[in-house]
Image (tube, rainbow over all chains, first blue to last red; front, side):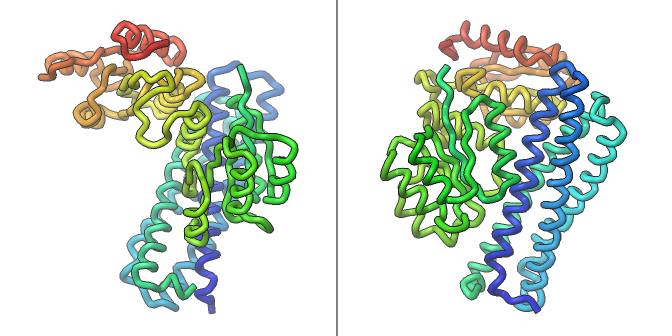
Length: 160
Length: 242
């Protein structure tokens, strides 16, 4: 059984995971966008490919961790604090956004696999996906803060 | 050009690496620390122009490090990146911090804040450029997201455009007309890829406004070329200085 004293750490962890996704996605998208304006050469394409793979791995790791923490947080709120009505709407939105990110991650990996870092159209699509990750994560952060604000209003956050 | 020094302190190695690489590519001289202790050691040897500080750090936290920075170098600007600042709310109010940003941070926003702070400009709601000239309001209709982002970054950046533009992006015609009414732009940049770009331009000319903004149609993706033309128009209208 989860202890509600973990809530503060959970909130903190979740926002850090979302921060990792948004920051890394934007930075990578920025590189890809600049790259699309310059001529590719064999060396920088190889370097870039390695970087894209590593960064997508990092995004995926943060995504999986955030999913796990969101599940723990929702269990505490639903089961231990019995607050289904107050917070379920925000959790539903979070779940939907996380699903979007999860599906887009799969698409991004496929885009990268197919193009191998060379096909301009795929790279442009990947850039677009990465920018959309950033946007989604900023929105996720806002939803998590709303949940926290709700708990403060109900004076339940103090107990953590 | 004098390279600005930034010290970044974040205990998440991946984030620290990403932010460091990102801002190095933007031309800043970056120093990275993963702990408060390390940051204090580095601050004994060098004086950065700006510090990006995470609050929750192992050992000495971001509040303590910020206090020491401001005691020894009050001129150094500090941006706090806060995951969840409620633990530190009281302490935050007691110390001198130049700007607080909540995680997850928007990288465009962080880039803009850093650029503004290092140029000595007001951060929020800033309508004046460094030279004191009111910003030229530019409304861009560009359906292609990556191109739109490129335009926004280029015109918003102090390095590339002198911080003399205030930008709004519209992704479709409805969005464009909504923003046209609320933003009151000086210059309109319409992508040739927008739906009925030509008709849109003529509709705008017929719009009942006292001061019709300059309308430009963008035919290419070369941001520098488009920016040059926008600048010429803005200089002619006296909206920018340089």
